[in-house]
Structures are given as structure tokens and as C-alpha cells.
Length: 114
Length: 111
Image 1 (tube, helix red, strand yellow):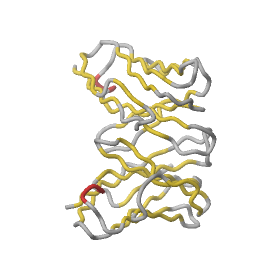
Image 2 (cartoon, chains in turn brown, blue):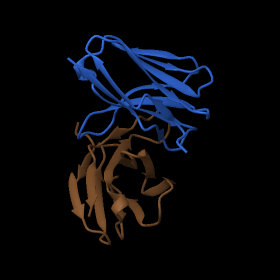
Image 3 (cartoon, helix red, strand yellow):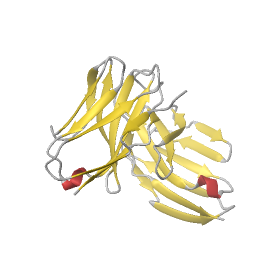
Image 4 (cartoon, helix red, strand yellow):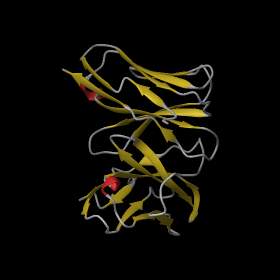
């Protein structure tokens, strides 16, 4: 069974640009969550999608957005990039929502903003 | 303010030694999870604890959930180089709320 696939693995962008990251969950998983990981702040929750609807949103500015498609694949978009957006962006999928449905993480997209 | 505080931040030990890492909070969690993350990879779930006082063992790893469900510990017996990685604890306040992660303990086991 294929794991969670995130593309691209690496991205280098310039301040002010926008970026779109993609996540393909494990087949059959309907919930997708996104996290930002930095050395200073650790993993911080961005948003969760289930059945194409955003169910939870973290404390990030409106420049961060996402969506989920009918096949459960998800994308996140960051507009007007800032240097501080440099991070590892992790996507995790789970079969359902809630505590009894463990998260399976992808290997992340490393974004560098120059 | 970090909801989950992990200590120590860094730990470097010799192969064969025992170690304990901690995950503490002033908040009550419905469950706590422990993950291990290796360089270039995403976190991998090791265990979930849901009952106060619960102890779970996974080979040489022992996980404990505090009685008040505010803290947890991970004890590794006879550490091996393959145990090297970033250990993260994560808590869920209730059913469908997102997981909150600690900043992790970076463990290095030297052969």
C-alpha cells in the first residue's frame, strides 16, 4: 500500500511569490491534515480537511489556504511568500477523523524562501 | 506558549545506556501519542496512550501516561544507534480537535 505522497520534495521561491504544495493520501483515507515544521516552533497545525470541507484551522494568516478534492487529494497554497515561511510542510492522512484514526505522515515538502 | 513541553531538547548517549524523555503540560489531554522522525522523513507513530496511568511497551520502549493525563514519558532500555531520531509527543484535547505537538527531543545514540 503506497504511503502519503507529497510533491514536490524541495522548492526554492523568492519573497512575494506564491507556491502550491500537493498531497496524495493513502488510498481510502478521507482526512488530510497539514503541518508546518520549523526548528524554532516545531510542528504547528495549519488545517484539516475531511470530505472536501475544512474542519479545523490553525493560527496562521490568510496567506495560507488549502483545499481537498473529491478523491481526497489535497493542496495547500501560500501567497505573498515571506522569509519566515521557509519550513518543512508535512501532510498527514487518516482513515477517519478523531483519536482512533492514527495519522500517517508524508516525507514533506521543504520550502526555502529567499 | 507551547502546550506540550518536551525535555531534554537534546540527548547524546552511548549504545547500551538507558534514557527517559518527558512530555509535560498544564492541560489535560484525551490522549497522547509519541512519534519518531528521522532526517528527511515524516514522523512515524510509535504509540497512543489514552488512559491515565497507562503503560505501554514496544520492545525496548516503555511509554507511560500520567495519572492526571497531563504528562507522559518515554523510556528506552539499552539504546541502540537505530534509536537515533527526533522523538515527538502529540496530544489531542478532545475527539476531533487537531493534534498539538511538542518541539521534540533529538536523540543521538553513539555506537
